[in-house]
Image 1: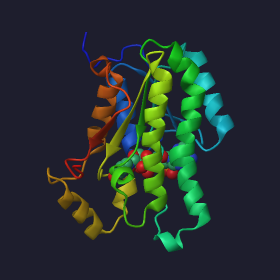
Image 2 (image 1 turned 90 degrees about the horizontal axis):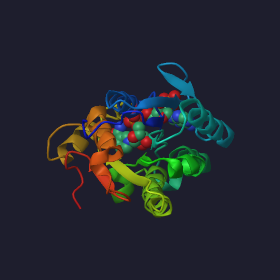
Image 3 (image 1 turned 90 degrees about the vertical axis):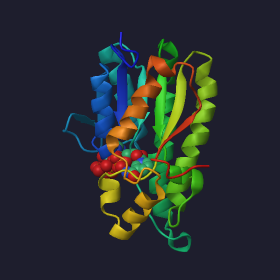
Image 4 (image 1 turned 135 degrees about the horizontal axis):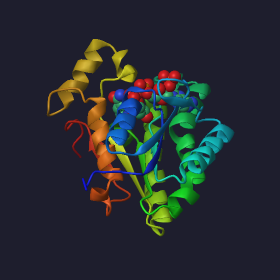
Length: 235
Ligand code: NAP
């Protein structure tokens, strides 16, 4: 069998209507997983779920596991930015970013833990960012939330590792999606110039890393951060 196959695995993806989320769902389906995609926006093959609402999130996990007979793979790709220079960053913009990017990952992991512990191939991938590692002008909230995902993943990897479930992080660099398309041309060009491969990443580049980390090829990999950034950050 193909070593990347996720045949029969049940996967839940948040932010599934977004650029990267859609590509992850498609790649997991191509690897033969049964995928439930969730996003604010119902439709486009997504079930509706606001990840900041604990009841909605917990109900989604319970329903997915009972309808599909378990839950093996969890991907947190939902994310938002609310950029502002530090001294102008509003409380609401700090909290909104923390709730979607970081708090939801904790709620997701906690609710999914019993199912992951029961699975023979439990695997979680949290989508962070290279800006969580290096920080970024005007992104204190976003960078803090993405750095928080790394600490969360490394701790959860230890908690869940006793039962064989794995938790990893993918840290994308500049990827061409709705999140970055609205940036000024100059900022986009500067980000591309930082890469050694000389191009923006594609959502499929991120999705490939996610499938690898969930597959049998990565069965001894946990608590790791895998950058998908064309060499944008080398440290
Ligand atoms: P995107 O196209 O904006 O996708 C993000 C998705 O998350 C959107 O569909 C959004 O829905 C959804 N979402 C927002 N709030 C939510 C909530 N409360 N509940 C459920 N879903 C919610 O952006 P993307 O570029 O694909 O980003 C995906 C992930 O990659 C994010 O975590 C982002 O931080 C990370 N990332 C992206 C880049 C990049 O360069 N693009 C780089 C590093 C990391 P709505 O559109 O309806 O708001």
